[in-house]
Length: 286
Image 1 (cartoon, rainbow, N blue to C red):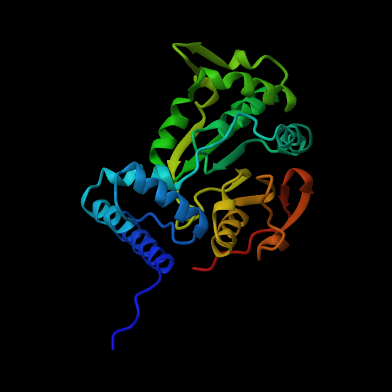
Image 2: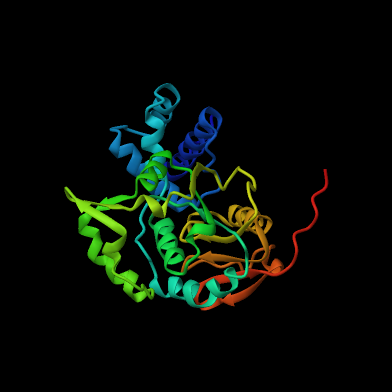
């Protein structure tokens, strides 16, 4: 007697597992520890966009049509942000964190999961106004190659500028935001000087390792899409990447309070989701 078939909702889970396994084995992108609910929604979006009747059909196309990869990555990743999103966070960086960063002769800042670059340009403008831009190297990393290219270009739809400007002023901006971009043909291109000391690089928080020792990590509204095990991995990565006394900024609904790495940090301004690395990294063993 044959076993009863899996219910439809279980079949959808199996299809999702197989799609994620194909993505990992064929292209080395690992989404298996992302939030399941988010993945189910986003793969359905991808399926509809590409006219597939099922996730199994999408999996088959992914394996045989490399051009499908970037469309799927676009659907699985979130590129929604704003310049100076949550202005009070950036005001806290300006007023509370910058005085400590000034004490370092040179600085490295990692914008992890930089999406289309809004977070990067927010920090670059802030550092420019505080006189730190010329001695700072920024690392802008992202799993989505097309989003990373947009970040490198620094061009945004002109309709977004009023919102950008409001956030900038609320974040303690010292000038007019228009001083930092040139507007033409429906777009606003942020000045090259803001990114000339930026290294843009693909980096997968789920699989890649520490690549530099940095003074500030900004990873905002990224970990909310990860399951608990991946959140722990990423926070371990950040712990190992920060210098003693370095800072970590997370999104409004993110915390490291329950992480195994929490003992290595102390709250600096927890209301603005800013922590400080307060214990020295453990020595590595070959």
